[in-house]
Length: 286
Image 1 (cartoon, rainbow, N blue to C red):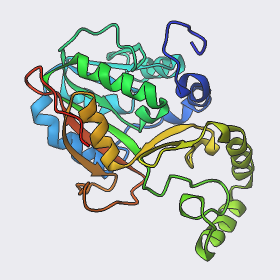
Image 2 (spheres, rainbow, N blue to C red; image 1 turned 90 degrees about the vertical axis):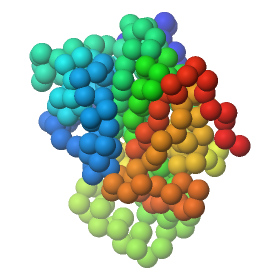
Image 3 (cartoon, helix red, strand yellow; image 1 turned 45 degrees about the vertical axis):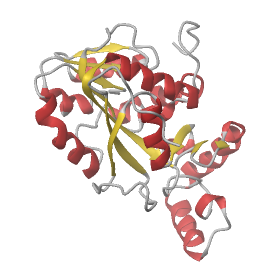
């Protein structure tokens, strides 16, 4: 799959897929909410989408199928990693789960789903262009009035620039707290941090920072993933630019974000957007 020339190129296809394959057994054990924010968002939309066609993107080994999959018998889940799809089939043999790429949902017709759900910051495994390809595909397959829910890493949050070493915010010189925390973590997990240093050094040429969005790594999987970060303002802009009405953003902790007034250090947040009822989309925000 990693060299399939028919699929769009993205960071995930070139870099991250081997990490998902390597760590797939970890995901096979997951069967509950990632955080209070996810639980709150799904609860808030449940009545609207119940019993209607649902698409669960990046299902992994099936965690979200245990939750979102309960809302409707007309449920289909996809993942682009064969090993994850196999695990999901094993965990949920009665669910429709198939191999597919978020950037090219060719198996699904236009205007069909009431909900597209993409959890675990899976959208952030794609590069910037691939991310927008996926958002356009989600818009295409959603019914007019349908909902898009996804989680995304926060460019203003405490995961960004959180490397294996004693670094401060945005890579600045660490203070006493960061240095002490690093020493404690290093003593607990020395091999993980040594691998993390090597991975960050290897991946650094792929990193980008454009202010409102960035490409970097994150403090999971031994810093071996290359992922996309956005600010909350950029998240609103990207959904609007791809045709959606922005509904709200909710922090990992379950708090509604006041996007125009304050930044938050939450490591990721959940975005809720809606495909307009008419064929018209909102104009991009300036």
